[in-house]
Length: 367
Image 1 (cartoon, rainbow, N blue to C red):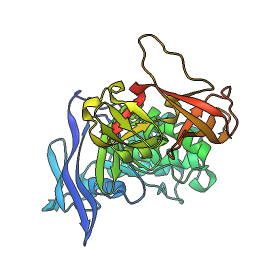
Image 2: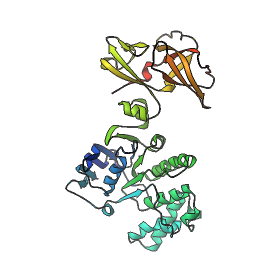
Image 3: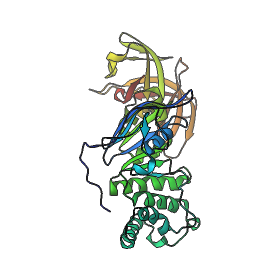
Image 4: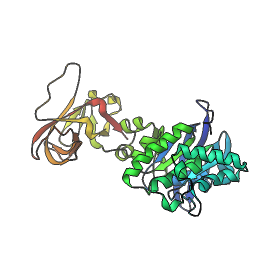
């Protein structure tokens, strides 16, 4: 099996204004998303945000009530009609793996290839190659009940990929695995994607899975896509409060900007510290990641050519988590505590007076 040839900017899958209503409930609302050939995109969001409904519309199991879904320029789904799943040249991997318990590993993997009418020698060759790639050749004659969860997931991946689909759909495929296996399988899924470069859509509520596996992430909330971008861009430059809070940990600082000053509860900042100063007028929310805040026992000394935002406060809580200290620091005279992640050597007791130093370039204005 060879990776399919791709054109750098070729659009493999396009969702334009896609919506889905169940009675009076809007499950998906005006989703527009394009995937390039060979791209891996995750739909990330909490339960009930519409990500699985979107995936099932792409697969053809649910019909959209608005918009269109097209593959390679051909419309597959619209309110006026949809192609059935079996005609879409897609493979889907479910949460439950859906492998047949009465078939061996090799028989499970061969099932879809046989349906395409290939001769026995070709089927055998394809099955052996994919089992080598997913590292299951030595288990070819075993039955699913004798396999671990990770091995069963590899069987599901092999069966989905051996038929060489145009689009691979994955619906929270790691949700049934324990934490260590999930971590291992994240990298396995990305390794297999890099091997075959199949256009892939991955549904998950786990941000670590999305960040490890994806070229881009579409963050969904209440049926809508709030932001689409690379894992780095989504994490470091969130556009909305929801994205900032859902992807990793953050401090959301509610303030009011007036002229050159933005005032918070108990502290303030010069708006000219920030590259987005022109956006600040009236009520504003800033996002500051805990690891972007430095902690010291004294006011930081000025550094030529570098401007810092410094806030004095008191440590109110702390927890040692091995790789870092997790502090809660209350600015003096206010009730807006900040969470700070500090290296193990930065050790302050509860009640200690400290200074927080924030690099303005690490602060993001969110809506």
